[in-house]
Amino acid sequence: MSATTMTYRPITRHNVDQLPQFHALPPELRHQIRVVSAVFPFRTNHYIVDELIDWHNVPNDPMYQLTFPQREMLSDEDFDQVAHLMDEHASPKALKEAIYNIQMRHNPHPAGQLKYNVPTLPDGTELHGVQHKYHETVLFFPSKGQTCHAYCSYCFRWPQFVGIQDLKFAAKEVEGLVEYIRLHPEVSDILFTGGDPAIMSTEALRSYIEPLLAPELDHLHTIRIGTKAVAYWPQRFVTDDDADDLLRLFEELIAAGKHVAIMGHYSNPRELSTPIAQAAIRRLRAAGCEIRMQAPIIRHVNDSVDDWATLWREGVKLGLVPYYMFISRDTGPKHYFEVPLAESYQIFRDAYSQVSGLSRTVRGPVMSATPGKVHINGVTRVKNERVFVLSFLQGRDPKWVGRPFFAKFDDEATWLFDLEPAFGTEPKFFDAETTYSYIRAS
Image (cartoon, rainbow, N blue to C red; front, side, top):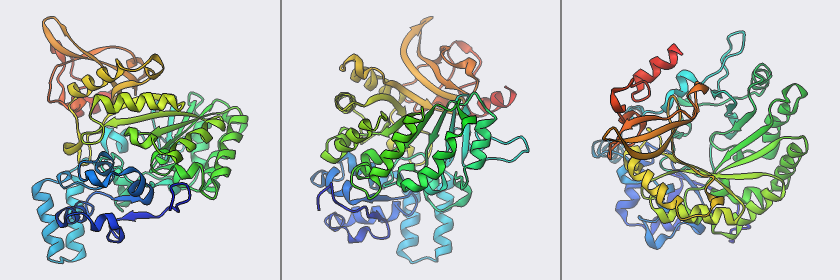
């Protein structure tokens, strides 16, 4: 079956046994996939399995690492506990309880998402499935888009997919969102996210988007679609039954004066290499969409200078706009995928120095932390102290944006809250509790 005509069929822990490539794996690897996927969500599809993974290089292949659970995602203790319960055919209740306890130790909602980002209407109604962290931008989690064509193994939104309702962001209705944006003329951008909004039918996506074209929302001029479908299921924009309808929807939005930005999540150059992925890019651009490319730096997936330089170079060749290199968030199996800040910065700098100016629209490394998007500008010496130079690209308080601040250099630090302030300054942004207190006081 060719990549251009294949039908989307999800592969999960419940049917992975039917996959020929799975049966070709050593028994130990198959066992590990079954155990780890009981804790962290696993979903892929035949396009990834047949077109993107090099099965001759498993388990080291980056696309395999990106989409299949790895043994090291769990500690030895947690892995052995789950494996033992499964081997002994423990009751569903006992297994579920053990898994839940492990999941709760992995910081399911980083950056204060449940604490600080949920907006309210004047009558006190909380808008679940909506987040408003930054002045100009609102995030919307449509309930019909709360899954993905495949799950990234490191994904910071893994709580959306493990079946625990209290951990989910999701909005069933759009009316509250429309009312909130009407009351907030400072909001110029809305980001549809998830999950992946491109997993929805065009009809469902239209039902969420069309109300945003109301005349009283003229201050909303940019509609962003955060999606991994451009990499994981580009057929969505080319050969799916309603692919043409989806492109017509985007054309209608652009004709109505809206800027449509596809926030394409590209993790590895291989995701740009197939004819169907390139066809999806051509069709989206022909419809008038801008496609920006972004991803975190992930150990075992793209932690090399060549990965990033090639990704940006090939992206620009296809008409994409390099946007962000993120630091993976402090959640889930971060210990396996994380890359220290100092190493991430060096990889970014070396890759950045190899590409033309058109690729240098990219910003990184960037941490989406509790106070905002923190940019690692560089490493230098000030007052005989080696320091990270940091600044905010976005902040909960707009006055923070663009103002440099400094942290002591630490070659093992992997997140903002691992850092300490340089020069004995106020540590307001360097540990979670102080940051929370500072935000509450602001």
